Length: 175
Image (cartoon, rainbow, N blue to C red):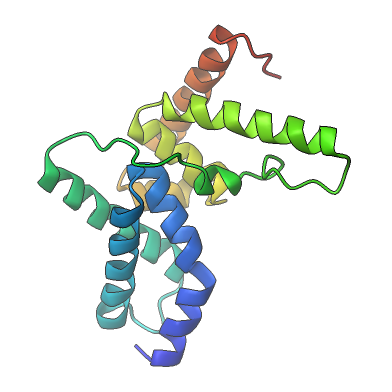
């Protein structure tokens, strides 16, 4: 792989891959290490003619992360508040051109949604992050997660249903 192409991919996708990894493992150092490993693998293995480099990078990142988590043989808990991944949520990014009241409301909504997402198991959280926050199609998310399209569709449906239930149980109105 050419150095220029690798640099372009890193600048284009590095931060979003880090946020994706962090959203799953909630460990800043692990996410950073794995992100570096992803681009090392890309240097060696990614064909320059690869059609969907973004999906390939996510898939490699996911596989490396799962392998690392298996090695540790324990559930990964947050070492710091997870914020960056959910900051990517469109419409909940906490940045508002409006008045301070609107900005405060958006930040509160973002925090509520972030907390609800953390209550989902990893696979359900991952399908929602990939399809809604990282804007992959369900077909692409299925490839990244190593499951069939039909399984991704069902998992997404169940994740949305469970997220809605969590929000409602905690007294939040869901539209």
